[in-house]
Length: 239
Image 1 (cartoon, rainbow, N blue to C red):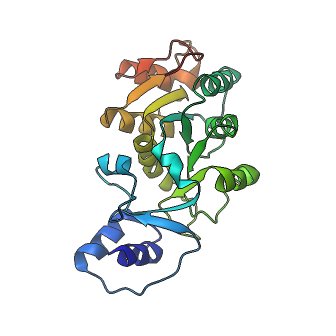
Image 2 (cartoon, rainbow, N blue to C red):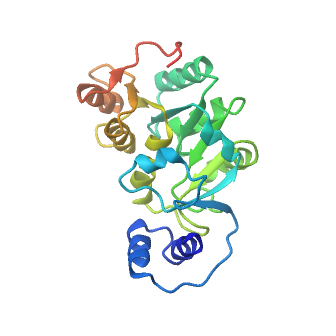
Image 3 (cartoon, rainbow, N blue to C red):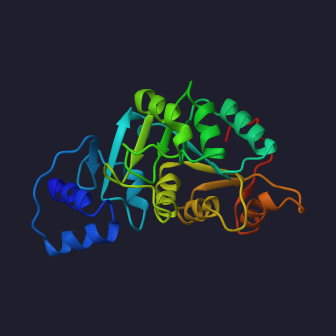
């Protein structure tokens, strides 16, 4: 089954539904090689956190220190257009929680800042494309460093492009791998909101940074607080 899942993943570029149908149909396959190490849902060392999901990834490709998945984690998510206030919160959060591995999505803005602040402690990045595709291009050096000394994951095989619909789907993995989640900045409709709602669904501890009523870039956090997320009262305390 392990070989079949990998072959279907390569054939269908990580499309969850198409892989599922191929498994149901017992579709014929040919064994293929991968540029990267991978773990499938039938493997013993598949991350148990992901089995909480309604649609757990069939396969995870990875580069780096896989043992980081065994440590306590803190997810930090937020806007790609990061404001100075949120940037300061991220720095203080990472300093206060150095014993935890920081999980985020390697996007611009909040994700990038969170990974950068955790380079001396430990960080996990979840991509919405193949591990051989650098996205965003500005993070080339950061991604290279994380592959070497930390951990980068993707359910998408090599050469898979960063398509728009991959990122909301990718966010479920960030939510599942995080013991707690902090949303540092979000608009009403955003990827951050989808990550937080998935974390709430998984009964994770979720914190949001509150914002003034007239700051549009933070209204998503205020809305999430109204939906059950906890208010982050201090960025300088362990979560």
